Length: 376
Ligand SMILES: *Cc1c(COP(=O)(O)O)cnc(C)c1O
Image (cartoon, rainbow, N blue to C red; front, side):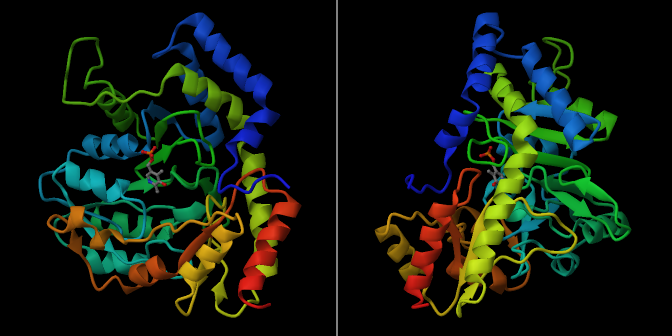
């Protein structure tokens, strides 16, 4: 059996090595390392895949969120609502830009922000919502867009963990996550569902004006070289990363299906164990299982993790501390309500190995060890 890893990028690479190596060599031969034609080619292909008008590539997913907020021209102390149970990026950029992150609680079943909690947090200073599509499935976007229309708010989707997943609207129509709100942001960090071999990110929008502003913002605020219309940042997707991504994009749906199928294998084997809660999929979302995250009750999470580690099975806690408990936010973030679910999740979550190269023998072994721990 191959060594079990949280993410197995090596085995994935070996299967498409010729395409990747060829694509990288072409960039090196061209010496067009920055703003080369490959970046535009990949952006165009991704726009077709996402069915969105504009894709603006940038340096990473956190920059994408920052560029999105910079384009919205908010005022100091404007409030932006985001979940308390997620990676720091969304709340971090809100705070960095001098706006106020308003942290709200999430849904126990889906790990995602809820419409009701957003409604409870809205004040006259609220200007935007950043829903995060955590672990690979959608936040309740249809309701979120209704709230946004009622209160005239921007919606910036963080789809770093859910690229390729779709929202299923009440009327049955579907849209790719990241293309529903005002702006969508994603990351191509190597372990994401569409990952490059370094850092990368992108923004999505159908709004021509915002697209221009975000493109400019990612490039020192200039449209015409050395004419700086506004303050921007330097955030680029480089050509080698674009070449890797362009080679991998045609595999994205297949990769997401492998993750989904591996999740079903885990679900079937683990859902009946007392004290283990397997992930729930909402009927309004497809699921691309960026993470396969269990909830382990009765205070047994850390012991299970240690037991798996002793048996050479990595398992990770995403995320051990909710954002409202982070020191960095002790002075700037506003907390809405008691955020009990986020705190409970931080105590219970455990993510099992999940990637495109998990095979049956590895999953059998992981499952047998989880069962052994629970004496099943
Ligand atoms: C990875 C991630 C980011 C940040 O992406 P980087 O490319 O690492 O900056 C933001 N939000 C979420 C939910 C993520 O998982």
